[in-house]
Length: 167
Image (cartoon, rainbow, N blue to C red):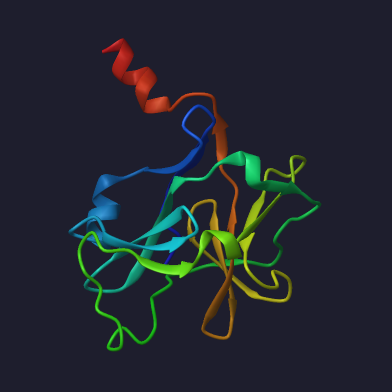
């Protein structure tokens, strides 16, 4: 499976991350319900397809004031699909998010030179890296998620708002 094609964005005015899929049909092919639940990493969310437990894309509030500057950049990542393991032990329910990392346990590193962000609670080096949506990379230690790398395009306002204002 390849990474979901789209534009990962950070909207300064909203303090939020959003993902704009290139193709609605590709998103619907992966998830006919277009998600349905999410996993929480602090205030940031990763949309999840309930029937397949496949991660789709990141989104949500993500205030920049908590980011720490660092020299970071993921290397050696490939593309692929990521599924939540042991779903028989979890019941994925529509609109009921699963908290993976409480906000007070997350730290975010940001490299203004490369544009990469890394959200983690533990180590973020030496992990298997998989890009599941364009600009969004999961860091795995075995089957455990230890990091989420993001490389968004930065906007002062949401690009869709500009389109709507013109129409």
